Image (cartoon, rainbow, N blue to C red):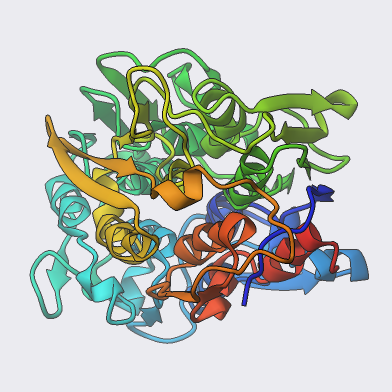
Length: 489
């Protein structure tokens, strides 16, 4: 049971290493020559463990070194001995069970192309939910490239069987605006490994328009650049807007061994920043660690400034030379002023759940008496760990919020009308005031839903989050850190 806060908090939180960066760096290290070192990598999470097991099946050697401090965060130093550009599976025709790890599934579907031909095909599979998450767009592109990819059961969905690609293949592919930026990242990371006639391999990847979840594609490009992969494009390190037509050309080249530090997971930081923004007088700083060298590779790091600061009016600051990323709650009564414009979250869709919860506590404003908040660019939420649009509708309605899914031009948005009793109530009620009825939230085996719905307890109390252990997908220590908002850890 999550009770109502009795007083504001002032905490510093250190999230575990970024899942998105860890899995990208793991794949590149497994394909590299020699031993690469990943410091501060996420290991105490289902998605990371799934990726590590799969890469070991494909022939990489991964040694986990974990200090007491690392263990408390769920991190470790990983020493990865790579395969030198071509997988060497420990068994013929390996089957990779990737559970519900979307990143690993998309990345390894493409990476299976560089398997040893003598080992036969690689089968990419997962749990029941993963078998409902579409992968047809990526398979279509791999087939255009010249790959042989077969659906084992249902067309358009895992499991898929991927055969090693030959040297006689296309040298350029064009990707439209896909349903997942992970499809683009998957191709970019194998581009330097692909064979070609006469030893001339590599790949050119052309995007005629900005990709879905653009910051995640930039993360991939910047990480490739950081580990020494050469491309003739300059967008890898650019922070400017995406051009209308962009092509990256990768010559065939080995990835040399590398040493990288993994920054903390800013996706996991978002609920804690939202917690501070929801509670006047509260403060939460996210500790990026001594080794952090900005700017962040993660798009979700933008949430503090560009969503909480610009749209919801929270106070934010970078402190201690950029190591601490702080958010403070403002106001006296705790009313959150609803944004006057739609908030576009298409580039940072993993933040939408926490933003939707914040919107449930918005007060009315001139021209917006009901306090309606619109969160736009959310079409990709349909194919995440669960259908997050439907899940938010179902769960937020339990506290009286109005949640409407609105179709926009080629996309979807959420319009959230807060329940009167939440937006109008003070933040910290006296003990003499009767608590509201108990509400139980389903989480749909979705870590982001669990993390976000817990925030309702801060202001409302009497909240039960069912299957709280689903946070182990990316942030096993989440509830320990959440308890610190109550002074309990």
